[in-house]
Length: 516
Image (cartoon, rainbow, N blue to C red):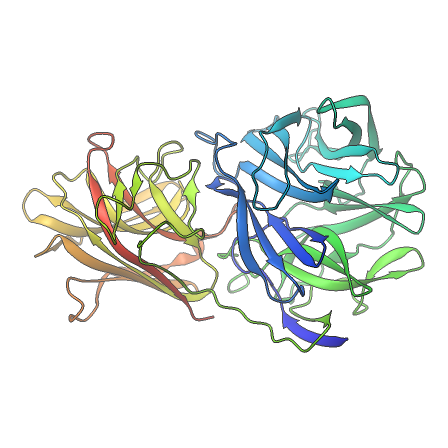
């Protein structure tokens, strides 16, 4: 075996709440997708070192229209039994306290790429469901329990377990409260494993911010009582100098006789804000005196770590993306709360993507936005758009987008005095700014570009490929595009505030080049 040094995170950009699974000689990691569709992104690897985007599980099985930001699809879990894959997920409809409207579902498939079954509704008592396939053949659902009566902001009060009957596709029998959590509180993300006659319960505690931690408890009986490991397996809460922060929400896998933990982490830019969102990292763990410990002897996240492989391997990271819209939309694209429909048309003008207009960037319903994850601190993204606006309410262009309250948008539109023009808008925590710069355009076809260098971003345009890029607007401080449960996205959109589906724009290409 060869120890291979790698750099975390292994899944950069918005890839939170990792759940890792091995089936045969393939490793899978499923991550949360929140309001972005298709949902439940899955990556594959044969060595735990290099990972590829394999598929996205949820397409038409969910209805997310109207769901608020930071809600929707939380913490999926994938497992494998009886020659089929199981996927559990939560659809969160409201997070307004004291309640949390969250519904847990189960779908199955013979292959990770589907076809996936219709969702089976399980319960709504709490989020982060996982399915445990017990050695005796029974199956049990675990989930966090939300108690609205608690006076604290976070009302997670522990972990419950209930048997699942696969024949009737329903939960049966008593609901068992198997874990109350520790003083770290905010207990969630439970996964159950069997090792050396013990049931090991892995949970996340401390919240998904800087106090995030991995807690382990064990019991000889699946229903408890569970003895808590006096030490946190993994946390950065007391390590402010670590480049990896907010570390927790973990799951386990074995490979070549070694055990590994895949976990959530962030890389705060300038020590302040995780503009890339919550990412996925990995480290080796070992069994010591009946407990899990990080193999490096610490209990903190490691930016540089080792994975054992069967041969010498080089870790490769390539975040570049290009779509010339020649055949079908590439699977890297995401949309908000709905899958692309007839409004994303590749047939009307071959070689172009024709986007039909949707609602504004602050809508929670019918946005027509195509976007990809920002995966690098330093990157450039560009597109060419052909658009002839008839009124100021019609817009098409390039956006940096965190959520409906935080975005930047440079766009072609119409001005009553100057005709076809280029403009720029910004929204910061719901406060809107329309920049006064109005650039007349000689053509209805224009190239748009954004350059991002850490916390700074600049927008550019040019009307022909032979021209030099010209900057529009100021140099932006982009730290406002960090926060919440997702990361920043970069994408293209068309908006018409006069009439639904009142206009369309043609995009020739979209490209993203990471430099970090």
